Image (cartoon, rainbow, N blue to C red; front, side, top):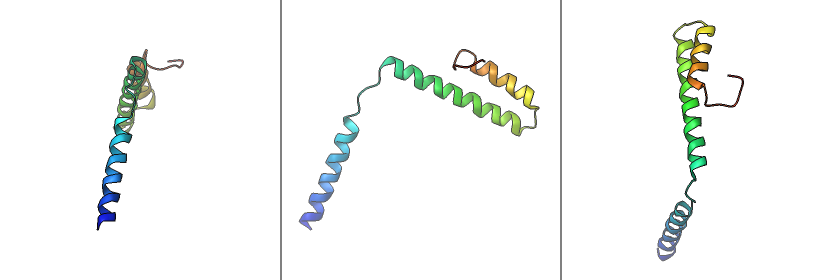
Amino acid sequence: MKNSLLALVSIVLIATFSIASGAPLDKAANDDIARHRAMASAHEAAAKCLEAGKKDEVCEKELQQSCKGLAIGKF
């Protein structure tokens, strides 16, 4: 029983220190995360557009507008 308790306490402590040791993100990393989330949202909207039966050209144009200034690419 003592060994089980010791093992459990060890696991909890290791997990706590692993979570706490993550370095805070800098502004550039946070900005990059926000851009990726915005792009993901735009792509989800494009998928829903296509599911709604709209033409590919219409959904592509909406996607291009949504992603304008976010991504590195021709659009």
